[in-house]
Image (cartoon, rainbow over all chains, first blue to last red; front, side, top):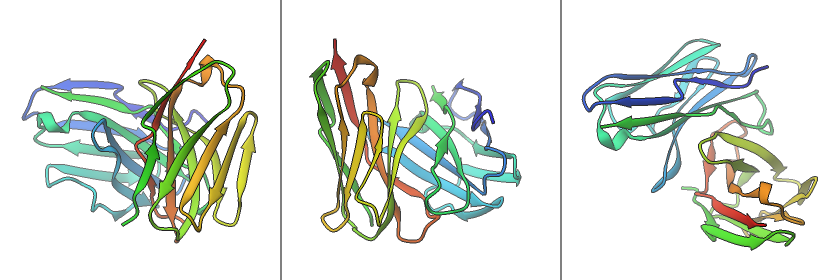
Length: 114
Length: 113
């Protein structure tokens, strides 16, 4: 398996624009997580899905953020409208069912909002 | 609310030295603890996972220990090499199996040749 695949690797956009980040989890994984990483706050959970169903979105900063998982092999994180404070690295991760299964990360999307 | 702390934030050691990275967590009711490595501009790579019933896990030159009652874990790296330079993060999972990991902010390690 190629691992968790995220696109794009880098995104530079202007304030107010819509941004869509994409993630393809590892085939067969039941859980998908979106995290955001900044120097100040470290890694923060935004939302996670189990079998394509959102379980906990309490980490989503505000209504400008939304996430979907239309099927087991694809998820999106959308920011509309984007703001400079959204600049961060966004990671997608997936895992198998089972509490002792390891969480496997994608390479991340570096987002810069100017 | 679970909080995970890693001290120091940065560490620099000469090549060949054995070193210990520390991780502490506020709620001892954890299901497991995982150590990750992150290289600059890259994602996180899982190194070791310790279940709550275990005391330690080993992989090559890495040894992770867990003292659940005191809320502490250590990552021991033997005979450090410049290639070990990276940020090391620990993360804990709450006592319900498939809940998300809570991460520390990491320790940035530099091994000087």
